[in-house]
Each structure stands twice: as structure tokens, then as C-alpha cells.
Length: 450
Image (tube, rainbow, N blue to C red):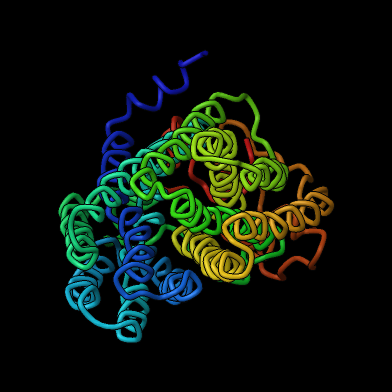
């Protein structure tokens, strides 16, 4: 395999730092999710539907907070956003593991509102660290870091839950998340390369209004992201239910790790491709590849089918992040990633209870099958309308680092055919980062694919 793209991006110190931070901070997140399900089912003696409802409450609140927190990342910077999260998260999860179902539900919701926006922060840091031409490769490496976290977190968490009470394991994991958040606050990685030296910390070089980029093309990609997490979160709960039915609870962690390994390999391969694959096409492939899991007769065929399905997990998510970063101006990327994350968490909020209720009615096979139906439907609908967003970007004046005057109301080529241009052309400015040839970050370079 030609590894030159990975060697090139890994030579950037800021990218290596972002990837390491991403692994350390995400491990408690993935461990906490599966332990929370086990805690509700085993310790509180509730159904999978009830466990899915707790996950749904937390993720809905995360979805509500995403755009707000993303906008704050654009305007206030990382430290002002993370500090309140550390306080609220520490208080909520020091109480939630030791109370009944209803208080747990409420505390999980409050914790979701103030969760550290880890995925937005790390992806912004990754995008800021490399030139636009290397963005997909760098984001693929980030997806690999996500899968490493996903493989390690549940494996260690489920192992601990089989030895110690789930309440104490859940408490420990969430406190480790707080500690990791403190580390992120101390490191304070660069998340935006387009700030002038004479501007204050956290003030973007260009912050276009919401109406300038919140367009159908952006929403379509976010819809694909939501459908992806419906499939993934539903499959997550179905895996737990399947291993319980197979009477192999101790293998939940290894099977999740095998699923994550498939995604890790798929992400590495996707980062080496010369061209991007449309997110809707990958979503359709993910849904089709996940469906056969319901046919597994025992644990190890189940694990093998999960590995195959995992091959398309990371590429699908990477494709949605990459496409968002190319249809939104850099000055609004924090808010856009917040919206993207909100759609993903909303998908998780739907996928968890859909699978949980299906499991209660038809067993784990019904839970696994139910979430793939919506994924295939969204993929088919999105692929049918994808042609509207494939118009070429306007040319750039060579050697100047500037683009032709463009309307602020038309940051994407897809929206140009759907609404009239603004009456006021946007001023063209060149930041200090734009003047660096290796990292073009003028708004036009963030809007149009290279």
C-alpha cells in the first residue's frame, strides 16, 4: 500500500498531538456508553428499551448543545468552552451511578447538555494542522484514532463490569473522562489556522452568518451522518443483546473490538484513495453490510460478520466530515461541526431506542435488522439527489491567493442553483495563514473541493 500520504501528514507535530489527545479523551466516552447500558439492564433491572431511553436522553441533549457549543468554539476558544463542561460533568457523574433510574435519566440529560465537545474539537484541530489537499488523509487517521478508542474503551469497561459493580465502574470511567478533559484544557490545541496575528484569541478571521452556509447541501451531508449513527448505535445495542443471548457476556468487549478493527482497517484504506467516495454511497454500503449480522448462528460467525460491516463504518463518517469541511467557510467551521455532531448524536438518539424496542419485541436479530432499513432508505434518497451538489467550483486567480468576488449568500455551489445571490458581495481578505502556500485557508478554499 502507498503509505506516503500518511508519512507526510504524520510528520506534522500538531496533527500527532491532536490524534493522541483524541484517543485519550474518547476512550472514556466509548467505555461509558456500553457500561451505562449494562448498568441499566443488570444493576437497575430495566429493559433494553429503558437503557436505550437513557442513551437517547443524553444524546438528544448533546444534539441540542452541539451548535451552541460549536459557535462558542468559533468565538470564545477552547478553554472557555471546556471549563464549564468539566465542572458540570464531574458533578453529574459523581451522583448518577448511585441513584435510581429516573434520577439517572435526568442527570445523564444534564451531563449531555454540558458534555465536552470532543469530536468537534479534535476534528477542528486535525483540519487546522494540515493543508487542504491532505485533509481527507488526516481525517481518516482521526477515524482510526476513534476506532482505537472504540476498541480499547468497551473492552476494558466490560471486563471491569464483569468483576466490579457497574455503578463503581461507571463512576470511574466518567471521572477518567473528566481527567482527560483537564488534559485537553491544558494543552489547548490550535483549532483554526485562519486567524490574523492582530486579532484576539478565539476571534475568527471571517465569521459568515448562519444563512450563508446552512443550505440544502450542508443539511444533506448532515442527514447522511445522522443515518450512519442510527445504524451504528442500534448495532451497538444489538451486539450487547446478542452476546447476552449467546450467554457470552464476557465476550462483548472482544466482539466490539473486532467490529472496531474492521472500521480501523476500512478507515486506513479510505485515507489512501486518490478520490473521495460520496457519503451516501458509503452509507448504502454500510447498511447492506450490517444486515447479514442478524443471520449469525453463534458468537464467532457473529464477530466475523461484524468485522465485515465495520469496514465501512469509519469511511462513512470520514466522508461526511470531509464534505462538511468543504462546503462551509473556515470561520464557521466550529458551528458547522457542532451541527454535524448534533445530527450524529440525534441519529444515536433514534438508533438506540429503535433497536432497544425491536430487541424487546423480536430479539437481538430484530434490533440489528431494524436500524439498517432507515440507513438504506436515506442512502437511496440522498444518492438520487446528489447530482445537484456536484457543480464545479468557480476558478481561483492563480498567484494571488484570492478568489473572484463572491456573494456571502452563496458559499456552496449546490446552493447557487437554489437561491438568488446576495445583493452585497463579500469583501475579500487574506489572513496571515492564507499567505502560507502550504495551507490555503481563504474561505473559497474551504468551500470548494481542490
